[in-house]
Image 1 (spheres, rainbow, N blue to C red):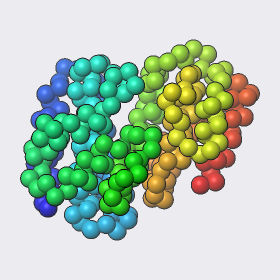
Image 2: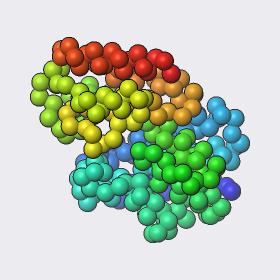
Image 3: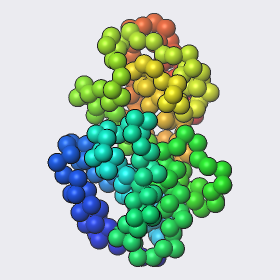
Image 4: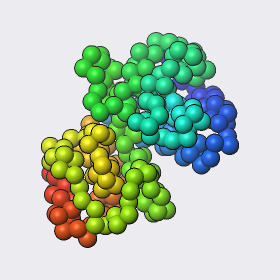
Length: 253
């Protein structure tokens, strides 16, 4: 299987250019895709994977969010629960509309690509994946979260309400009991459990608990974005106590 990176990048850029005029979200997701590809490559290299597998991990990184662009065009949002499942739509674009052939001629890794992209955003990965499919799904899920930490920090520094929920009096908001229970279990937080901005913030912190590889956790600390998220402090004493508890849980992993 031959992966021609320059051709793939040119084809991807051409696809993304078809959504120009849709606002800054297009460039945000384009940049995110390039960074996730680089992170996927780094994780794959650290796991001593073969060159073809490293290239495949990189390709999945490039394509993992291809459904985001049509999502933005149709719904003007990146919130799946308010629009559509962007991962499933990405699989539709690649395999039902057959755009995968625009990026790679061989179909021998289609099952792996389909599984990894389709599962990259789910709460819990399906139990019927092959060992190889599961490996690549775990890899892209880690790479995606690592760059999401960067995106969340960027939004915070620009004072942008990324979750579009009430953040008035943010530093005094509480954390819902159900959200904290999931954090204490060191689990991802289910979207339907989140009510306040602080619930969404804790959900972002809990992404760390779902990282699959030790190299991913190492990268999270090296890049510094996760530490910036973890360093948020609340003026609500109960919330700050809960954040302290989460910080302690993070450092036990």
